[in-house]
Length: 266
Ligand code: SAM
Image (tube, rainbow, N blue to C red):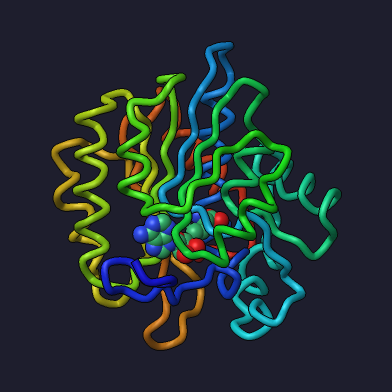
């Protein structure tokens, strides 16, 4: 396989341009709620990611400045007390006030000794940085295709666990592929809690993800963004399969208490 390519596709997406945007605030708030719920009982858990990114971002860097997305996300948000706010504060106290944690670092912050973290990241540069970021956390960091890697490690030990599916949706088929992956994974690991993020665009491509999942009755949570440039993201969505008991109410509550970056109903 040529460097930087997967099945003929170039890996051009870099999350550093988007880190800390309103979609990250949505996704990471919900992820944090779920991690907190899954670790309330003594039983250990496995946390896996199909598309991990580099794990730590500098919002004062050139990438964040170029898009300005963090400025309309985490920089503008007022977070309620809770696991997400704790993870962001811990990252800033350790790595610097202008940093922002990616999902792997949020998980490392909220999970316990004895919980397992396995992360897939295919881009060589992002993977290298992720290894550095996760050093000392005990996380397994794999450079392999996310769907293939998580499938190969499933069902994991411990068997109780959560999978975050967070592709970059650069091509149209990514939506249907994510749904196919989630359904296939439940065939191997029936109790997996699966959280799938998707962008909401003017063209409702996310129907290709949600329609095939409908028989599994996912909990779907969506937010709108206040102002969108033409062709940009209009909102952010999450589909949750095997939602833990009480999770929908806690998720709704946590997002309702987050001020500043989501459009409220008139
Ligand atoms: N989950 C991260 C977070 O919330 O902090 C952000 C991940 S970003 C949206 C998507 C990542 O997937 C990019 O870093 C990209 O390099 C990686 N990627 C793209 N194709 C992949 C594949 N087939 N398998 C694994 N990772 C891939």
